[in-house]
Length: 334
Image (cartoon, rainbow, N blue to C red; front, side, top):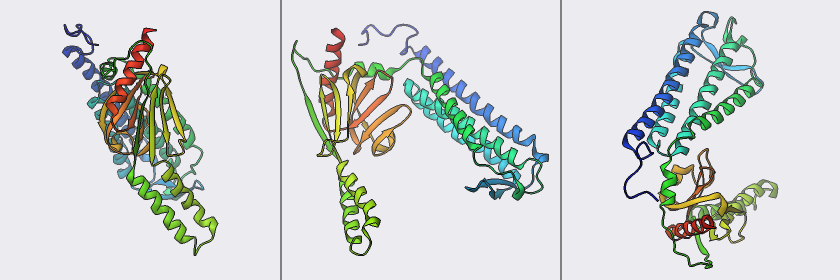
């Protein structure tokens, strides 16, 4: 809980400290975006006299070049494309800079995108270097794999670099509603949620597959039958909260299920979220959060000890948050 006398000087709620940290974040990400754009532009331009015009810009599955673009377009498109991507990621991090996970996700995107764009541009220049015309460009297939691995490593380093500093989300979780439990009292909270759209889509696919089975062989309609059945099985979920943690089970069959132990939960709160804000419908795992979203609206948000948020779209989420915070408090007092 926050001290009613006000935050400590220089803490995460200090106005000067907030502005300084936000300024540092924007400066670091902005300089990185501009520096990478400069490397892309001047790096490609340095080899302009040794490249054909147009140059090979796309390779088929066999590794042979199958499309081209003008050298001027390539010289402009690559840096500008990176500036758009990098600026969007930096803006995302700046908008939610108070949350450590948001800054970390932005750092991961910026680092991954930068190394991927540089690697792809370098491979393109290498493949076209000193050839008479673009159809003679070197083949390219396995060379992309090291670029992807290096980009993934850079993304991890970017996450670690920005996953530090103040985090108001953790404080919000501590200040969430809390239920008063008597010593030795045990409580269980159950709630459910369903997706009418997913249920309707499942029935529609099943009916279409059943109709197609009259005219088509069974092996052909087996895939849509299974897809329809899967949609129906995952169109609803039940959430159970007790002293063990939070369990989410799908469908009337209560499978598959996911248990989040209480020891991995720092606290809970309630937020209103749309599916696209957390990655989409269904089960979504992002660099900074995980979500089980069957509909937009009220969500139970678990603040995990790892720093991630776990979103669960469920009705009457406030009562669930109250019980979780009470159980977390009781556990920390032991």
